[in-house]
Amino acid sequence: MGIEVEGVERLERDFVAVDERLNGPLNPILATLEESMVANFRANVQSGGSRLAALVTLPPEHPATAAIRRHFGHAGKPRLVRGGDLAADIRGLARTGRFVEVGTTLPNMAVLHDGGELVDRRGRRRTVRPHPFLLSTVEDLDGYQKQVAEYFIDEPLGVSGG
Image (cartoon, rainbow, N blue to C red):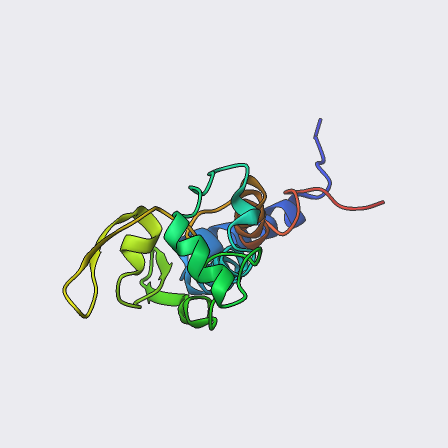
């Protein structure tokens, strides 16, 4: 008596491919995730935070800031977007064999993101309300998860059409 199992060779090839991806270099998937994160964080800045409305409520503008924005014709326009310096500076900062770091190196951006106090060129102290822009939406996280899954397993193991 014998048992014949069809598709074992294909299943073995699939397992070998997955093993190679799991134990091989992660740089290809990290590069893909870096590109996605940069694009999503730039979109957060360019939308003035509106992409993040479900995650965070931006504080109301300080009356003096609102007056300055009205004076220069920026009233009603998205915040965070002046000359585009912030969006342009968001990039991959570090990538090792196991992780990727995305952000900006512009001075004072941590204070803009988290809130805090700045000292201007004249030595005056100014409280800055938080304007987080380095956050991921649920849709962003789902996209990252999908990219990782597609990298490690292009299709369900041992499943073939037909």
